[in-house]
Length: 605
Ligand code: G6P
Image (tube, rainbow, N blue to C red):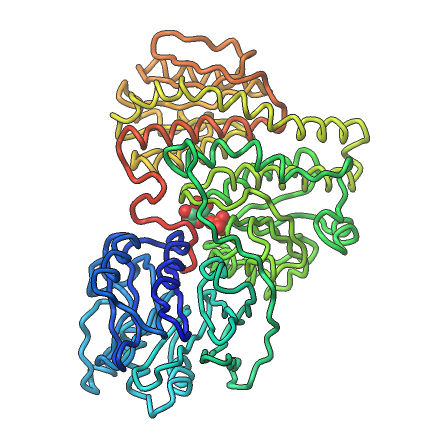
């Protein structure tokens, strides 16, 4: 992952670089650093704390310069210690920042050791630094071009050299990099957001591109070394600080923003129309015979939920697969399938690679469900449906998930209508239910005080089981993921019917069993599963729809949800699980918005 910023200007650029890093912390926060050319020498500051600490350091040391690069790291090769923090130097003449993984770094390191290079870090990045140094003959652009030919893996890099005081060279392959065009100054970054306020004109580099930034221009060549014409685009990235308001953490704020995010995502039209997904979608949606959904993490769970909707409402066979698995396995392509990638960021490396893999196998039709309109995923798919969650800052995804569910429900209803399975009255019912969702969510959010009471108890546990059935099994999975991500409590989810095939062995009074209990067709089956846990002394924590008649008893703790919300019920039932994870994490005192070892956007394998 990692975030990169670079700049060539006529003013001291350090504050722009530091601000850029603050906005890129979602890409990793294990360490950070900045390097500038000062009096003809590369100078740097690095921190294994957060960007705020780096900022203090550069102020204290008065680090300044007109040409610079900066980095926020998610550790891959080497622990998050200062020696491994970027920028990485080669022989005090050049500095580099890198996002990605170089797969042949061991071979290259041995070759470079043979040439007398010493390695002071455990990073794969230091190999790139020395390689550029070893081929540098007065032209950094040429040296970077020569170097990238030898790299296997994924990278976005930005490099500066002490002999070229007004130049930054960048390259990308498999990791994102954008060029920001200014007046008499130019920039590079992993994400346009990093440069909001400095420019709104961007060139999105393509795979294999190498670029050279100087004060008065940008030169780009493609992977074959040919000059590349890349169009500049106006992007109004909002870089302003997002305020916490009355909330303790962004995650809590984002949970409470869900009614607004969902209402912004629900299409305004009074009918489900395939053209919502893009020009040409009505024809393609008529022709497809199945769906293949690819995603990672929380987005994968929204795909799993959608499978139930797609098969039940639209009667269309749907396969859901973890992107990192799909991209490497032998699969049988079906050109009549619509490939759907789901992603909050639209930059997740495994999902992007899975999309490309599907396209290379001959899947012609692709759709992105995504929260970022300028992302690589949206650019690389035939159709797109944008969710309007707004910027999500907490690493644990909340409002992005529920808005994805809304988008996928709209997809299922649209396909159902096209295939003759949703009649006019059903259509208007679905639309009514969607429009009432924000209000229904508000009444679920009002359960927060009761959930806080439970979270005290949860914070003293080290394990938890989550149960759901049918449409709510993916919700149990998402609840368990939320709890483990931010509270570090080990949590697993099972379809409740599977309990007896193994996990029941874990049930004792020390094991809380969180159960999602909507009043649907599987309720009676679920009640039996609840009894199986009670009979073994397990402690049940049940989120039960008001009309389920599940009541508090010994070993059975119940929070009442509003009445059953039909097929859209998962969107309501996930919210108390988000709040439970959040308040349990608060009670344990973890860094809720930036949990250890994780990152918001995973742009490496
Ligand atoms: C990371 C985030 C998760 C997210 C997953 C997929 O692991 O921490 O919250 O669900 O990436 O991200 P995407 O942007 O593709 O939805």
